[in-house]
Length: 152
Image (cartoon, rainbow, N blue to C red; front, side):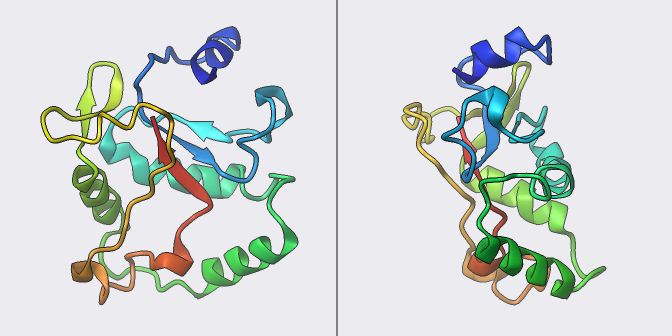
């Protein structure tokens, strides 16, 4: 499990049910066979944006499981995305809230009543684009989503 693997490396303490972000391309590999930062656990929903940016910088460039075709698309989107318009961090915070993610003393968790907490089976969930984000150039479209999914 991710919790056991993470503890064996002496990294930040993780708890069952804590929400993390993982690369979908190398998730099938043993933890020791994955490139660095294949799974990250942001400490709060306000840190999700920075965590994704770090994964883009440090993991996606070295992940051996990302196909050349996907890597080419990713690099083309990376170079064509408009800069300085809107707040991409706001997009990630709003998306986390729409998924009913909440900050806790043990990191990000699924919230209380009416939450997606029934999704404890490890299903992949990614923020979806609402129609209110469709005109925002800093809101990733389906083709601009990073190759990572939120997961508990």
